[in-house]
Structures are given as C-alpha cells and as structure tokens.
Amino acid sequence: MSQSLLIIDDEIVLRKALERFFKGLGYDVAAFGDWEKGLAVLSEKRFDVLLVDLMLPQTSGLEVMKKCQKIQPHLAVVVMTGFGTIPSAVQAIREGAYHYVTKPFDLEDLSSLINKALDHTRLKEENLLLKCQLHEKYGFENIIGESAVMQEVFQLIVKIANTDSTLLIMGESGTGKELLAKAVHFRSGRADKPFIAVNCAAIPEGLLESELFGHMRGAFTGAVTTQAGKFELADQGTIFLDEIGDMSPLLQVKVLRVLQERHFVPVGASKNKEVNIRIITATHQDLTRAVQEGRFREDLYYRLNVIPITLPPLRERHEDIPLLAEHFLKKHNRENKKHISGFDQKVLRVLCDYPWPGNVRELENLIERLVVLKGDGEIQVEDLPSHLRQNDVVHNFDYLPIPESGVNLNGMIDHLETSLIRRALNKSEGNKNKAAQLLKLNRTTLIEKMKKMNL
Image 1 (cartoon, helix red, strand yellow):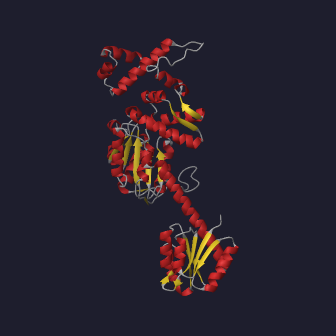
Image 2 (tube, rainbow, N blue to C red):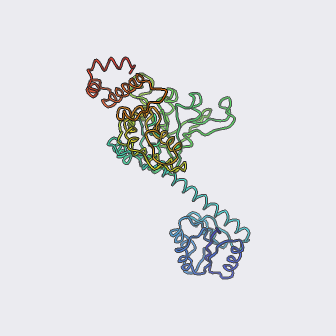
Image 3 (tube, one colour):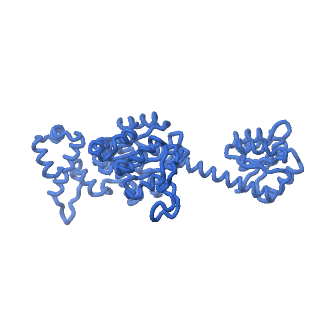
C-alpha cells in the first residue's frame, strides 16, 4: 500500500512540481492551494504526512497544522518556510510538527525528510499499539472475580491506583500479585512510563544490590561496564519488588533510604542518583511475624505498609473458579489456535471442589495443558489429571473405572479421607471444633487422624 501525502501550498508552480515528484516516487498525493479544501479532503481520507507552507493567505501553516492534527492525530507534519521565518518553524516543531525545510530546498533532501517522518509516525503507532496491548493484557479487567473478597480488592484499586502511595500486596504464591501490581500501574498516571519488576528471591543476595541500584565500571570483579539498576530504569514509572520479605537486612536499609529520600548510590559510585518512582512490593510471608522475629526491619515494614492489599487464595473464592476457567480457556484457545468449546458441568464441579494449592497459576497451567492436549470438543472429567479425578470420587463414585490391573482401594480411601479433612480445615479456617462438626466426627477423633496424616 502506497504512502499518502497531503500538500498545502498556495505557490502553484512549487505545488505542481512537488505533486509530480512525489507521485513519481509512488506516493498517493493530494495537493491544494486552498487550505480549506485540503482540510475537507483530510476529513474523508487518511493521510500519512502533511507538507504545508508556513505562510498561507488568510492564515498560517501552524494553524492549518493544528486543525489537521485534530482530525488525524497520527499525522506527521513537515513545514516549508523561508529563511526569515525559521523561528516560526521552530515554534511549529514545539507544537507538534516533525520537522521543517527552508526554501529553496533540494527535492531529494525533502524526500529523505519525508521518509524519516513516515518512520517516526510508524514507530509512534507501533508504540501506541504496544501500549494498548499491554493495557489489554494487564489491565484492571483481566483480574477476574465476582466473589465478595475480590470485589473489595477491586474497590480499593479504584481508589488508590491513580496515586503515588506505596502498596504492599500480600498473598500466597500464585494468587496474581504481579498481575495486580501491573493493573495498578496501567491504571495510574504513570501508565506510559516503565513498569520494572524484580523478584528479590530469584536473584542471589550478592548480585541483588547491583541489580537494584546499578554499578560503576570496575566496582567489583566482572563489572566491565557501568550499568543502570532497576531503580534508575524505573524512573518516572513504577518499580515492583516481589518477595520483599526475602531481602537481606543490609539491602532493607538501602531500600528504606530510597523510600525516604528518593535517591540512591550505585555500587562503586560517590554521587546520589535522584529518582521519581512509585514503589509496589509483594510477599507471601507474614511480615508482621518477620518483624517480631527480627528478620525484617520494623521501620521499613511501616514504610511499605501504607496501603496493604491481601489477595485471597483460590480455595477461599471457589465461586470465581468457573469465571477464571472460562477466561483461561478463551485465552489459550486463541494463543494455541485450538477449538475447545467449553467444560462439562462435572468438570466445573471438580474444579470448584479442588483446594488449588498452587492458586490461580495452577488453574491456568491446568487449563492450558487441557487445551493443548485436547485440541477441540468439550473438556470431560476423563481429560483431567488423576489427582483431580480422585478428588471427584466423593461426588461420583460410579465414575472411576476398575482397570484390569486393579485399584489400590486402601490408598484411594486414605486419599479421600485426607482430602476431606483438608477441605474441612480450610473451610473452618483451621478451627478443629468446626472442622469436626463438618465431618460429623468427635474433635479427639479428628485430631488423632490429623496426627496420623501429619496434618
């Protein structure tokens, strides 16, 4: 598809020459001496570049540029100007033009400038598309949940997303803490700035300081170049420190200093670097207990815990499991070009009854595996892995086949008993009296079984 060029210039000889030249290069060209006619055509047809003279009868090229960019914001603008009006051309650049060219000019030079303007527009559109994709992938809408506990989380996000307050996200592994952090970032005023994530538990302690704060060349063995740290890379945006509870006491002090003073010193440097960032942290640990045990600094804890958010484990919001399963089914159908139509109702019942120790991440991994292996049709109970089929035995004793090799009856009964006791304890939030009532057992009998099972 040819690139389109709109030319507005009242000098007829120059306008005709430009029109012939760019048509000869394969451009789709529309040229007008009357700027209002040019504006009318722009309202009906998409153009890639506007080439406009700064000195027009009854108006200025700068005003025409503004009107054109209101109609087509992506439009790259190159202004033509005489030597005496260069300050006006510079002003046009400040207000949105790509560049200017002074008359008289070489047509080949102008062609090169137009090509650069096209490349500039293409990069802008690609960046815009990438941002839209990031918003779509990590936006608020992709945190799925209709349960009361998740609705509370959503309401809190709406209130605090467009602030610079420090967040502490707590929850078990796999509950979606990083996804929540990204949703907050992309809903904030820093959405078009960097989001930098650091897993503090995944980086060796000896390297984490350099990773966070950067280092100067020669600061340590192997530091052959100066390298910017994550805090510097996140400037003007958001830094997400995952598993902050695993950070060493020495680094806790340095992070505290960044929170308090908004500057840091790279390894081997002598001068501070200033940063303007929002800090979001996350942990699966109980930081209150870590403070009591002396493993985490109390002053840092209170600095991080400005706005705490707790993400519940999936076993505490079973009503969200069908929604999540459908969401992941559509996602992995699309990504893997598969055609799974849905889930049998028995499958959804099994998914809702399973305790999901790996939380949302475990559920997504399962759905992806089912989509890839099944390919098309409807997911049935027999498509599920064995541990989930065994979890369904309490609801559907007739389902399990007896193969020629036989079954381990005692083992299956033990598995069923352990599963029921775990689920009763989860439902009662660890209250043994209530769990015993749910299982219609004496409390002492339940405790004996728990000891036997090492629960």
